[in-house]
Length: 464
Picture 1 (cartoon, rainbow, N blue to C red):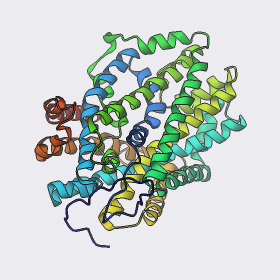
Picture 2: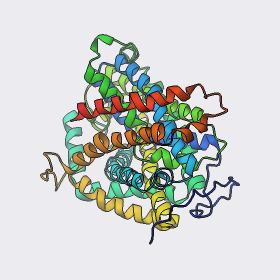
Picture 3: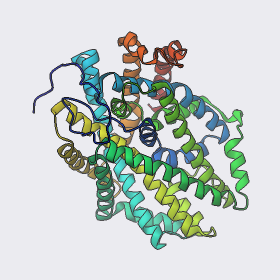
Picture 4: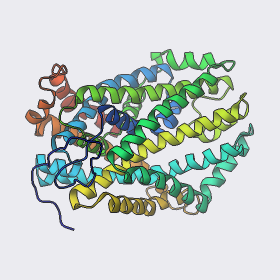
């Protein structure tokens, strides 16, 4: 199929409840409501990074002090970059590659292609961990992974991820769930899923928190999490907080751009960006209140690392009154969190095929599903039969993770910040004209052109 010519963006169409997603040429599907967009975009950020990664990273970097720095990063640079990506999508009504070509020319389209590939690559190893959540939810429902013997839990987890059949099957199941949601379209699929999954996610978090904070000794965990001790802050801690804030908001891979492309022209972008950042931050804070009190109550080290979720938490649940029910709720919300982010990674790749090659949504979803499974299979097998395969002294999974999260994602964010703040600034700033957020215009440009490059080069320096 041929490339679309460089024509002006197709006009947005108003949502009528029967809006078709097959409007790639003459129109564009839109969100049914601003709330639907906010919940979907927040779901993009509230993934495994918030529920799985945030608590153990906080544990490794001093608790309350790290939390304070993280909040500062999210509510400044995070909001500025969210607004930039939303603006790029709203101005054109297209996904990132087409949007950059229409506004900046053919050379900028390559930035969009790299960002889209980045989303695809992240999705390909993200579905591996998403598959683990499916498998552990099934196991916890039968009670087979609830045990106080940590060595047994480590052995069972290692055996599971090393089993090629179990690993690929769970990955395929999770990928299939994601594809079903995306195939249903913007309003009937992504927006509807966000409206159900996000409230359910927060409700389940509150239920687990209610049980965790009543455990003997849990208040020590809450105090450690919420009381800052700035003496533990170092340069590495600042950069770690910045990196986690940047990546947890789903920036730099075109996800927010494509979600912004479904916004009607009267949507208030500044307040939407603040709401998305706030909900993402709230999810991280709730995850800390959910896990760290239980960790302290049972004397587990808060810096236990990534195994805190799949190894340490089942051991805690096994010793907890009503632990079986709490464990089911925990892994169910983990699945919900994984799905909301996986959908946001799947959609920009689908939108790329629709916008660039005029594909229908159905075939585009099937193509992305098959390609993701094929590309993700080596990442899944790198924990087992291909564990000896090393590239730059990294497993396939680790190499995909490092390359996308530490290199390509910041590069995408940096390019969008420069494009909005320098290349098309007179046009971009008009999205705030006549709004109560107009005071933010000069601040926004400073954040994009000065602080964002400094922050991203700092993250690169730290990661390299």
